Amino acid sequence: MLKTLLATAAILAVPAMAAAQTVGFAQIGSESGWRAAETTLTRQQAEERGIDLRFSDAQQRQENQIAAIRSFIAQGVDAILLAPVVATGWDSVLEEAKDAEIPVVLLDRRVDSSEDLYLTAVGSDLEHEGEVAGQWLVDEVAGEDCRVVELQGTTGSSPAILRKSGFEKAIEGHDNIEIVRSQTGDFTRSRGKQVMESFLQAENGGAEICALYAHNDDMAVGAIQAIKEAGLNPGEDILVVSIDAVPDIFKAMAEGDANATVELTPNMAGPAFDALAAYWKDGTQPAKFIQTESKLYTAADDPMAEYEARKDLGY
Ligand code: AHR
Image (cartoon, rainbow, N blue to C red; front, side, top):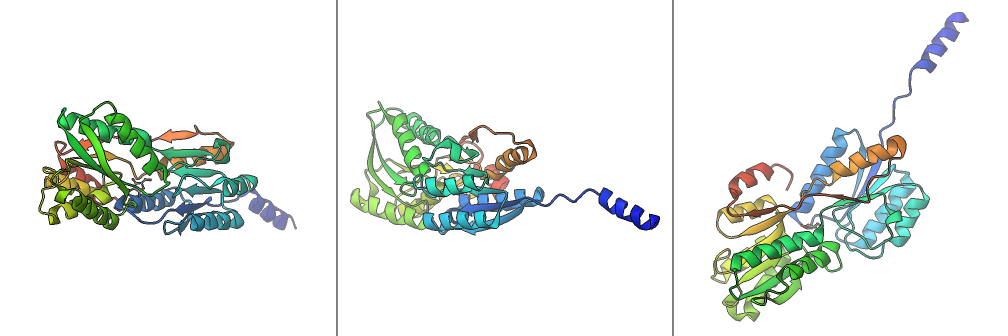
């Protein structure tokens, strides 16, 4: 009897193994190399921390993201990561997560909902990225007249809205620089190429275009192809500045086809999981915005070394 009691006491004394935290990730899709890298790094970060990550690819559709969040709530996950495809229309589902006491962390894009509906947002200052790109062009053309064509990101997404306004701020007051055409390329390489082809046709074969500003590198890479097919030299006849710093844009820079990019780190999950770990531990409330860096790279920055440093990151 005594033996049985001691054995039972010993079993009870063993601390219960902490269960792995479960996190649902409502990802946008895989529209760009940057997005693919963000997905890869999120999976890696989760694995390193012993987090059980449940992944949903919304194929660029907000309704799919909303359905994924509802499913994560029904599964009783410990947190939800959301990379919101557009900025509006999230209030109801975020309220549902809040009612279920599930913290939501926004990754890389912003929403126009009230801040109390999410725990924190990890991302760059998207408007500043546009300003950095615009300032690069202002300096590069040094007062010469410059007709710019712009490839916008997904309509209604926070990077498309803010990268546009940031660039416009930077060129404001520089009457030599004018945006003559601006259209969405949906952050994809194929649309970037298609829309650039239409810009070239509309602008006398491209002869009067001085620069391309693309809201991401993938669209720039597609556009570079279109410029070459039109018989022009990208990087020279038409300057190319874009955002993300994916490996392929460094290759293009090394080959003289692109001029500058502003880096957006794809590792949004690291800071997000750090904030969640502190929140789970003792309820620590993180800052509402955890900002990542926006660094400018130009062709003078040893693009092949930058390519090598990034090529295995899942882009
Ligand atoms: O939200 C970040 C943007 O989304 C990246 O710049 C772009 O490549 C991606 O698709």
